[in-house]
Amino acid sequence: MYTDHNHFILDRSRLAVALPIIFFIIIMVSSFMAVSISFFVVLLIFQFIILFIFLKKQKNFSLYYLDKNEWTLCIQNQNKTQRIQFSKLINHHLYIVIYLNEKNHSPLIIWCDQLSKQQWKKLLILAKMF
Image 1 (cartoon, helix red, strand yellow):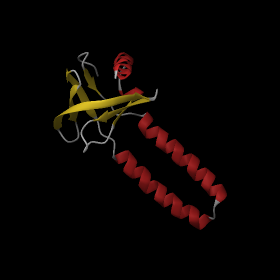
Image 2 (cartoon, helix red, strand yellow):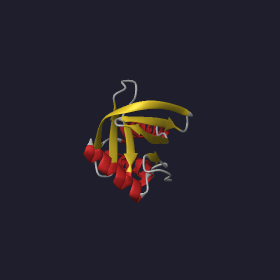
Image 3 (tube, rainbow, N blue to C red):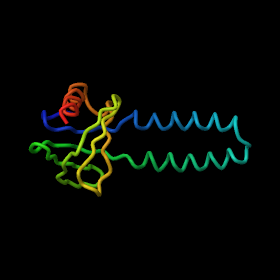
Image 4 (cartoon, rainbow, N blue to C red):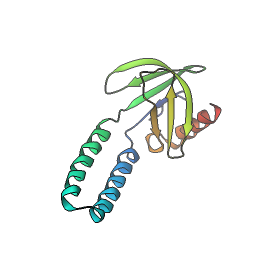
Protein backbone atom coordinates (compact mmCIF):
# COMPACT_ATOMS: atom_id res chain seq x y z
CA MET A 1 0.00 0.00 0.00
CA TYR A 2 1.23 3.47 -0.81
CA THR A 3 -0.38 6.78 -0.01
CA ASP A 4 2.32 9.43 0.32
CA HIS A 5 5.97 9.80 -0.67
CA ASN A 6 6.95 10.07 3.01
CA HIS A 7 4.73 7.28 4.24
CA PHE A 8 5.63 3.57 4.23
CA ILE A 9 2.96 0.99 5.12
CA LEU A 10 4.49 -2.46 5.33
CA ASP A 11 2.71 -5.68 4.45
CA ARG A 12 3.57 -9.05 5.97
CA SER A 13 6.76 -10.41 4.44
CA ARG A 14 6.78 -13.81 2.78
CA LEU A 15 10.59 -13.78 2.65
CA ALA A 16 10.83 -13.30 6.41
CA VAL A 17 8.78 -16.48 6.83
CA ALA A 18 10.35 -18.57 4.05
CA LEU A 19 14.01 -17.91 4.88
CA PRO A 20 13.97 -19.33 8.45
CA ILE A 21 11.94 -22.33 7.28
CA ILE A 22 14.50 -23.07 4.54
CA PHE A 23 17.36 -22.80 7.05
CA PHE A 24 15.39 -25.00 9.45
CA ILE A 25 15.04 -27.72 6.79
CA ILE A 26 18.75 -27.53 5.88
CA ILE A 27 19.79 -27.81 9.54
CA MET A 28 17.42 -30.73 10.15
CA VAL A 29 18.57 -32.70 7.08
CA SER A 30 22.25 -32.22 7.89
CA SER A 31 21.79 -33.02 11.59
CA PHE A 32 19.74 -36.13 10.76
CA MET A 33 22.72 -37.47 8.83
CA ALA A 34 25.27 -36.44 11.47
CA VAL A 35 23.82 -37.35 14.88
CA SER A 36 21.97 -40.20 16.56
CA ILE A 37 18.19 -40.43 16.30
CA SER A 38 17.55 -39.57 19.98
CA PHE A 39 19.67 -36.42 19.79
CA PHE A 40 17.98 -35.56 16.49
CA VAL A 41 14.51 -35.71 18.08
CA VAL A 42 15.63 -33.38 20.90
CA LEU A 43 17.15 -31.03 18.33
CA LEU A 44 13.98 -31.16 16.24
CA ILE A 45 11.80 -30.15 19.21
CA PHE A 46 14.21 -27.35 20.12
CA GLN A 47 14.23 -26.08 16.52
CA PHE A 48 10.41 -26.05 16.33
CA ILE A 49 10.23 -23.97 19.51
CA ILE A 50 12.76 -21.46 18.16
CA LEU A 51 11.01 -21.31 14.79
CA PHE A 52 7.63 -20.72 16.44
CA ILE A 53 9.03 -17.89 18.60
CA PHE A 54 10.74 -16.30 15.61
CA LEU A 55 7.65 -16.40 13.39
CA LYS A 56 5.44 -15.04 16.16
CA LYS A 57 7.82 -12.12 16.74
CA GLN A 58 7.06 -10.38 13.42
CA LYS A 59 5.09 -7.15 13.59
CA ASN A 60 3.46 -5.06 10.90
CA PHE A 61 4.21 -1.38 11.16
CA SER A 62 4.06 1.91 9.30
CA LEU A 63 6.60 4.70 9.07
CA TYR A 64 5.72 8.37 8.54
CA TYR A 65 8.39 10.97 7.83
CA LEU A 66 8.08 14.08 10.00
CA ASP A 67 11.23 16.19 9.90
CA LYS A 68 14.93 15.64 9.14
CA ASN A 69 15.76 12.57 11.21
CA GLU A 70 12.41 12.25 12.99
CA TRP A 71 9.80 9.65 12.06
CA THR A 72 6.56 8.30 13.48
CA LEU A 73 6.34 4.55 14.02
CA CYS A 74 2.88 2.95 14.13
CA ILE A 75 2.73 -0.70 15.16
CA GLN A 76 -0.55 -2.19 13.91
CA ASN A 77 -0.79 -5.11 16.34
CA GLN A 78 -0.50 -2.86 19.39
CA ASN A 79 -2.23 0.28 18.04
CA LYS A 80 0.74 2.18 19.38
CA THR A 81 2.22 5.33 17.80
CA GLN A 82 5.52 6.89 18.82
CA ARG A 83 8.13 9.30 17.54
CA ILE A 84 11.48 7.77 16.75
CA GLN A 85 14.83 8.85 15.37
CA PHE A 86 16.97 6.71 13.10
CA SER A 87 20.60 6.34 14.01
CA LYS A 88 21.46 4.46 10.80
CA LEU A 89 19.99 2.47 7.93
CA ILE A 90 21.88 -0.49 6.49
CA ASN A 91 20.99 -1.97 3.11
CA HIS A 92 21.47 -5.75 2.86
CA HIS A 93 19.87 -5.94 -0.63
CA LEU A 94 17.01 -8.25 0.39
CA TYR A 95 16.18 -6.23 3.48
CA ILE A 96 17.03 -2.95 5.19
CA VAL A 97 17.83 -2.73 8.88
CA ILE A 98 16.85 0.49 10.65
CA TYR A 99 18.67 1.19 13.90
CA LEU A 100 16.93 3.59 16.27
CA ASN A 101 18.35 6.04 18.80
CA GLU A 102 16.00 4.72 21.47
CA LYS A 103 17.57 2.01 23.61
CA ASN A 104 14.34 0.12 24.34
CA HIS A 105 13.65 -0.60 20.65
CA SER A 106 15.13 -3.45 18.70
CA PRO A 107 16.17 -2.66 15.11
CA LEU A 108 13.41 -2.62 12.50
CA ILE A 109 13.79 -4.93 9.50
CA ILE A 110 12.06 -4.08 6.24
CA TRP A 111 12.08 -6.85 3.61
CA CYS A 112 11.91 -6.01 -0.10
CA ASP A 113 8.59 -7.82 -0.56
CA GLN A 114 6.87 -5.71 2.11
CA LEU A 115 6.80 -2.62 -0.12
CA SER A 116 5.97 -1.86 -3.73
CA LYS A 117 8.94 -1.49 -6.10
CA GLN A 118 8.56 2.28 -6.13
CA GLN A 119 8.53 2.50 -2.33
CA TRP A 120 11.46 0.07 -2.08
CA LYS A 121 13.54 2.28 -4.39
CA LYS A 122 12.71 5.34 -2.28
CA LEU A 123 13.75 3.48 0.84
CA LEU A 124 17.03 2.44 -0.83
CA ILE A 125 17.73 6.08 -1.68
CA LEU A 126 16.97 7.03 1.91
CA ALA A 127 19.37 4.33 3.14
CA LYS A 128 22.12 5.71 0.88
CA MET A 129 21.56 9.21 2.24
CA PHE A 130 22.05 8.05 5.83
